[in-house]
Length: 448
Image (cartoon, rainbow, N blue to C red; front, side, top):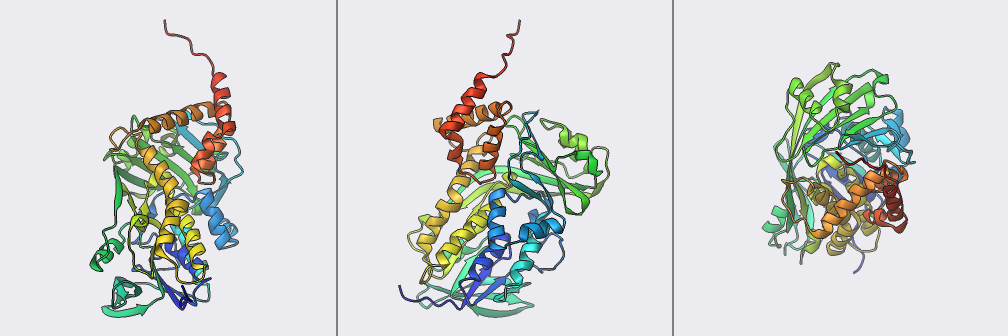
């Protein structure tokens, strides 16, 4: 294909996906410019462009491994600046169907912190790279293309009312769910991007507390998992600054109230009252804040028959998952590794190959897990196949068995935290352990 110019890459969006994209592009391009409409301050206040930044965020174990590989020492830095640490099963109280799950040690490190804390530290590390610069308070107004409109050669931006054009050898769109790439492609005459959507109508409300350190004991977080019967759940997590953040959520329009009294009543209504009992007698820090997430959304770029050269898409701009499961930042990190692989090859990255690898390496399995889990809620639309019913029944059996064989909960956590693929749960030794633990289940007396 010949030697591609590697002078400048432009990343649209200083999201976690954008920051990790900039990090891997810095190894392959002379200059990397990150463009964002927000003011990128050095404080840890939530950004306007990240409306979900106030709420509980999870950096899953696989995501932490990748970020540590890309930014060596970042784990220790996050801990030294306040992130709370523990074991992902040993120090997390999972409440499922009102039952507290066992807490075996998993050997997977949990970092509990706010999204702004993580993002600010990662941005500082990326900004320190000698060939990376940031253009903040810049609106992205469009793509620049070759005369035949088949190659993207830069972007147009506006700042303080003044327009300018930035040339680039590669543009990476990491602007999130509201990405304008589908509209830009249509304007350039490319085919419409196919979309898969699953409407879930999830609503969040979050409130912060300052709790006595002994109140949660050895638990870093409490996760009262939403049951299909109620569609309600909540997560309570200790984070930096001596704060505890509580995010309650409901499916299909059953949104937690915005007032403190209604918020507490919602927590009391969950399948377990663990979080309610923890915070009920303590004064909150400020008013509750809300967020809405209408649907799981996947843009199927890998199915497109043609796509412009010089443009790639990453993170939530490709696939936006139900935030209840905390997978977004980790999938962005997986995508950054796919991007690293493609820009490390000779020649210009080929969009068709990149999107195929992104689907296989970062999106497919997580999309299947998320949409499959959401189908368990009766009002969520979608086909419930016989295969899906069998999978759901097996996972239910595995979790029930895990109350006796605690190693099964560790195996489950390794999949949930994206360290192992979903098929690990049907490995022969796991299936055998499920059968054995199920056979050892205590007998329940027949009712009279």
